Length: 189
Image (cartoon, rainbow, N blue to C red):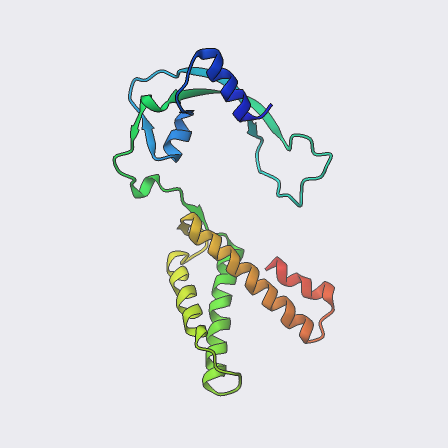
């Protein structure tokens, strides 16, 4: 049974017709449970165990993928109010790891090298290089060091740049005649 089916069944058994969610669920939706409100009902729902596996890591024999039942308390929308102000502290932040920071800095240096090569006439000129340099510089201001706290959109873009830089490094190694197995080390940086 899915969580949605479990929750709908519990709503039916408890005579609840309004929209419900957990305390944390309402917070994610920009609402907060009013002080002193008691849960309309409690029921067991599925929760993932530890780190989520990606689609590539999961196989057909992985079963529930590390899911287990946990009791959760549900509050109705009538028991909530719109959050007055979303402060900086309420926005979830993520840490930039060493590989992400290294590849972000490496991409900046790579773009600066390409810009210099274009200005010297060694490669074909492309105006978009300046936009890329500005974008990476702006992201570097946010992700200024290993362990810097950034919002999800910034971290997602940092990870895209990391993958792009790793691929550039890999193809450069292959173009220089490096065996594929050794060139694949680029993805470990």
